[in-house]
Image 1 (cartoon, rainbow, N blue to C red):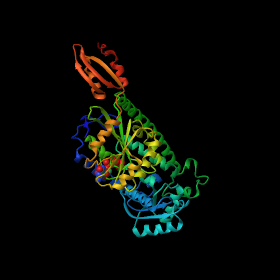
Image 2 (cartoon, helix red, strand yellow):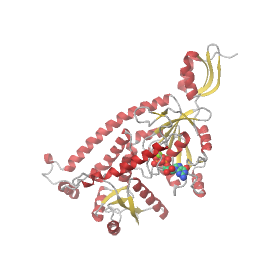
Image 3 (tube, protein in one colour):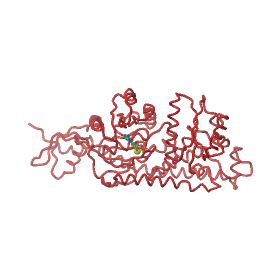
Image 4 (cartoon, rainbow, N blue to C red):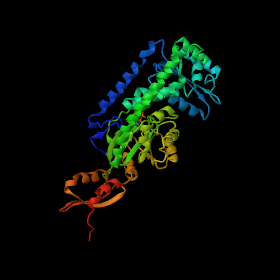
Length: 482
Ligand SMILES: Nc1nc2c(ncn2[C@@H]2O[C@H](COP(=O)(O)OP(=O)(O)OP(=O)(O)O)[C@@H](O)[C@H]2O)c(=O)[nH]1
Ligand SMILES: [Mg+2]
């Protein structure tokens, strides 16, 4: 385990630095957070009674008993199964019970009803027999496809993007996280908006434009909704920009300290938070659920040689992460793009870790983090099979194998970190007067001390430090030795 500061810098976006003694986040605290989350889920269905609700509200109603449907266009049957298993896991994370799952082999999804018309009828039958209230499709559907499939199956139809957005909405806790998710949801909803349970909007939905005479002062509900949505989007954008400024300030103050930063990234549920906990004893929420972590958590850690760095836990990635999410979370994801090193955690026990590796790299490129040095960590080696681990090592030969659960390989990981975390750039040889103890402390904190001694005028230090700190020390350069 790495040494950690007790005064840990908490959730980078809370707008303030919270000091969390290690006892604060103990195991019991984690359980509590998980329990609270469950309670939140159970409260989701309150709006079920509404009869005249907008599309936005309607899509947010509880998903309870669901049937999954997928179109399998490319790849092997195993790929199709992995994809459906992930959809099932996402659905369960959102709080639903998966009753059945169907896959259809097609060259491309049907333009009208996503699956072919015959399959849609079969799906309707399965839905009826199982008593399901929702169908979830394994892809992103057009508004038209959603509506037409709904007409056949007679229950609510949502797509994978909406499902992921729903999970994010349930898991967001910080003010910024909530605002980011809401923004993503509204952007998803806007083009899909249609009234629900109201004749005017029904007309609009089936006929496209509302008939002449129904516009103007007697504006249709859908138009009012659209206007309300746009206003809300603008407001959220403004608020997020302000929060971003706060985050920027904090990040640049961290940068000024010139402590190298390491970001933990990877597919959702890979064990990123577990690894952070294992490395720092930080007590970050770990849950066998997708997207357990949405807010970046920054911890300070020290390498065995005394060098300090920051370690950031981040939101997990997923195949085809909805672009609305990437957009909305761009500012938090920038923490990753700004890092000196990315620890790319991959779940060695998963069915397709190599696919996950490339899905994550795609998102990293998307957020301009493609050039940041990356160290692949194969996690869960306690339950992974050897051939899978070997397959990962073929695509990532430098990968370090660990188990965050048992602690196996963690010592090797710390060693790898020690060689990868960048060393301070400038060597200085100074005598710091005794009244500048603050400077000496900073050299110890962010630099590497090569030699320390004391003389009549002050503390003699030979050390490697950042360029910024070297400049501050410039006034105390040691007299040339004879
Ligand atoms: N067997 C085993 N399970 C692990 C290991 N590391 C993590 N897990 C489990 O994997 C699940 C996910 O762990 P998290 O640490 O929450 O994963 P994450 O990557 O932070 O997930 P998100 O924040 O949801 O993206 C939890 O149930 C952990 O207990 C490991 O080394 N071995
Ligand atoms: Mg996590």
